[in-house]
Length: 158
Image 1 (tube, rainbow, N blue to C red):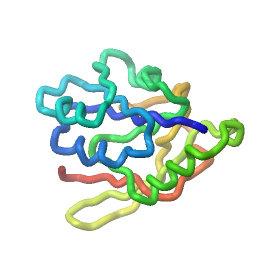
Image 2 (cartoon, helix red, strand yellow):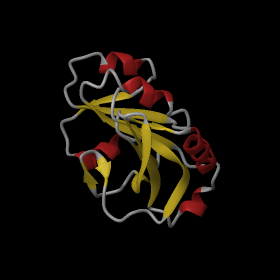
Image 3 (cartoon, rainbow, N blue to C red):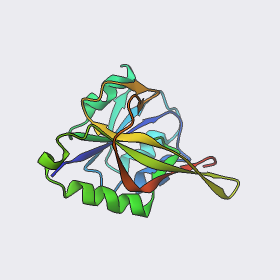
Image 4 (cartoon, helix red, strand yellow):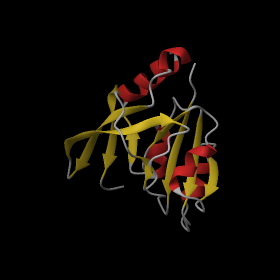
C-alpha cells in the first residue's frame, strides 16, 4: 500500500491554510516548507500535526523531507475535492507492484473566481519522492500518464 505525503510551500497564508489542510485526510503525513511566514500560518497548521521545514534548500529537495513514497503537491490556495479525496483513498489501496511504472499522476484543476468555476488543464501533482524536476515548489516536466478522478480546487480569494 503506497503512503502519501502532502507537500505545501507557505508564506503568510493564515487565511488559506486551514481550508487546504482540512482536505488532506487521505495523506499519511503533511509537510510544510515555510518561506518566512510572520503571520499565524504556522500556528494554525500545527493544529493539523504537520511537519515543518524552513525554506533554505532548492524546491527539488523539498520532496526529500517526505517520509512516504508518493508526494501530493499543492498550493495553500488549493484544496482537494471530495471526489479526489475518494480517489486518493483508492490509490492507497493499490499494491506497490501495480504502480511500479507510474512516475507521476495528473490532477484536474478547477479554479474559482468571482463565484464561477473554470477548468484548467490537468497538472502533474502526485509524484514519487525521487522526482527530480521542480518549479516554484511544484513538480514539473513530463506530465504523468495517469490521471485520478476528482479535482484540485483553486481559490482566488481566501
